[in-house]
Image (cartoon, rainbow, N blue to C red; front, side, top):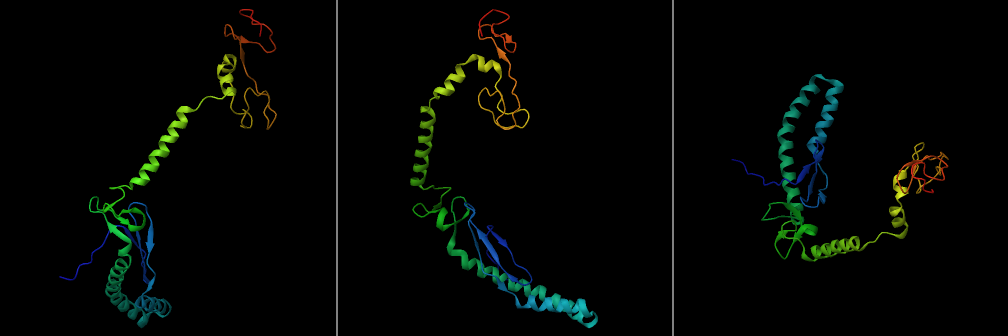
Length: 216
C-alpha cells in the first residue's frame, strides 16, 4: 500500500495542467492563504505536443496520445507532491480545534490561553466590550424621549384623521408633514380633513362642521 496523504477540508485546489496552486482558508473568519504557483514542466511540454498534434496529426497525434497517458500518471504524482508541500508551507498558519475540529487561523481565531478556537472559547475582553456596547445601546433606546415637534404631531387628532401621505402620488418624492404641494413636481396633495369634535369628514373650505356645527 502506498503512502497516504493527510489532508484537511478547508482548502481549494487551483491547479491546472500548467502547474499547481492551492488556497487554504479559516473555517471561522474565512481568512485565506494562497500558495505560490508552481509550474509543471510536463504540463507545458504536453501543451506543446497537443498544439503540434492539432496542426500536423498523424505521427504527431500518436505521440500526443502517448504523452497524454504518461502525463496522467506523472501529473498526479507531481500534484500530490505539490499538495503535501503546500500543506507543510501553510501548516504554521492554521490549527485544528480539539473541541469542534474546525481548522482556524492562529492570527485571529485561536485562543492561545484556552487552547481552543474562539468559537469554543471566546476572548473574554472582546465579549465584555461587545456586551457593554450592547447595554449602552439598550440604555440609549430606553432613555430616548419623543421630540416636542413629533409629540405635537402625534397628539393632533385631526392630523391622524387626515391620512398624512408620506410620498407624492405623482413622482414619489418624500413629503413634509401635511404638505399641500409636492416640492419636486408641484402636484397638489389632496388630503381629507375631519371634524376634531365628531370625526365627520369636512368639505373643502368649510368653516363649520356640517354634522355638529363645531368651528373648524
